[in-house]
Length: 150
Image 1 (cartoon, rainbow, N blue to C red):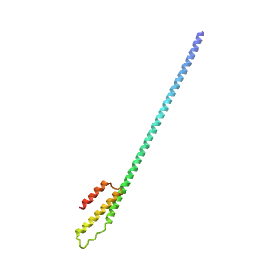
Image 2: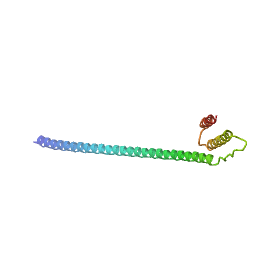
Image 3: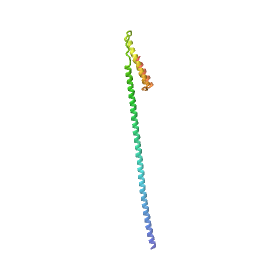
Image 4: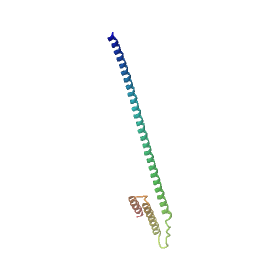
């Protein structure tokens, strides 16, 4: 009988130990699941942060591109206005050459053409000096003006 009582106590102790082990395993399992969820949540937060940083970087790049495009457009417009102003000055500041009584009509036309050519070359030089055209463009346009004169 004593062995039965001892066996009963051992069974009860074993059942208690098994229950404790099962409870511990369940707790560990839940802790593992929660840890996995926490890691998953941290990963999602990191991914969201990275996506937001990328979006902001793209916005900054686009804004910089738009600013550069506007600045380039403004510079082109200023250069065009300066070119038109120089062209207008060239046409309005050409003094009318009065033909002398000794010269014929061909000599008078020649003087006006020469004066116009010189004024165009001066205006072209000003554009180059002000940085609106490059040295290569200056030479090309100058040659064209001189070729047209001849």
